[in-house]
Image (cartoon, rainbow over all chains, first blue to last red; front, side, top):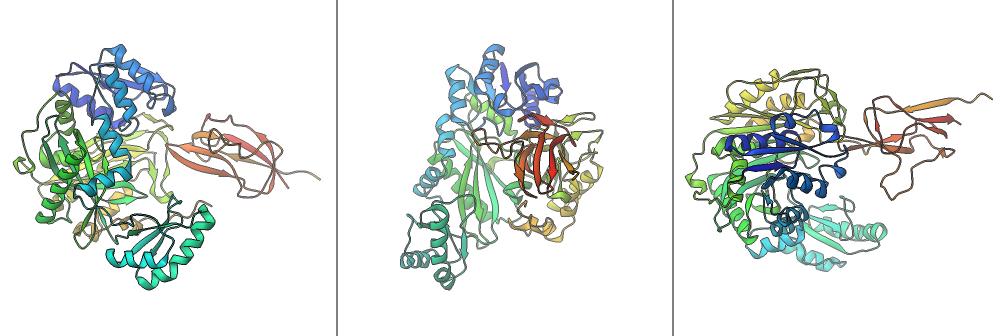
Length: 452
Length: 83
């Protein structure tokens, strides 16, 4: 086992890793930028090293500075947390080069997961369903019609030269495709100088379901069940839960098997997540691999009894996976709300400032992962995630009741936070019934204008 | 004729950027004529970028904030002479 781990991150995830180190009897080294000299992770760690100025590019994204800190502290391993350098192959290799164990996937895994097109090809070959899409671009309507007859409607046509959502048209049926194809072609030519179009099956009202994977160095891979991450705004997850209220036992088995196939095809190591889009008809499609510990990992921990960060450390120290999903002592239901310093009434604008009043919730079934404390000034330089509030009970209804009560207890002032939004959602009848898709949040948040 | 001047202040704390990217030219320079709602600069707060826009048609007569420096809520950024 390791004797000292450097935690190459800040905020709540730095605390999470430092706490795991303490429980394992491993010394921890915190790194921090000049803007973070009053951050809580410094107080909990055994050692602290400043790695640069406030701007992330010069501190938390500064590979040379972090590697130097690791060498200087004598750490034998490094945990990258999530975000920042967690999925940078170059960083994992730089650790290797200094003989420091990178607690996470192999550099090859990071490279494959980062190349979405390549990952999709690997999945197709491994028999993991992917969203059907035209193998090559076309500018011919007859070809498009023929292809769409094989995949079925609705379809999405998009300019192959495009990006950022521009030039995308959804066609509900053949009539729609005949009407929109020439327009999309003209638009693509005008906007991107290339009239080639790609076609993809459009999944209506999908859910976002992901499976937690753990893999050791000896080829043993297990999944730890799913997380329901459908409630999002602009592709940012807001509420996650485990298990998903949208899966049957059969679907869970099929998706879990596919997730393990996906991990095997990548020769995956350590913790990772396979993300799927689940259609209302029960078909599911691979989206991407997240090669890191995820923000929402606590809901899996509470429902499986497995501490994922400790498992990451154990596996990196050549530990083995000698259990399967069926062996786990699974129980209950966990729900996480990501609390951000954002004003939901003002189009989610960030809300920086000093926390003058801080009262955290507690009691039965409450887990709070947060780096806030009374008097803490939120730096303007970093992410607005300030707390992950997680509730746990034997039933989903019970977990919702605990979450509602905990949200009422939670006071963070004078900052604006997303707490009021979550209180509304806990009372919403479709949320309570578990009936929602990725468009759910529009019920509470007006479609934002184009910022003009 | 007396000229009227308006101040553009930071709507919240954040990092001030005069150009969209390090390699791009600044949005505006002193002496530039600007239209109402024209983008003058960006403000980055907790990884979210906001456009700072001109409240009036006019001319930029002062740029009070340093590029890439942190601003506090309500710090003066620009002075625009109304045309």
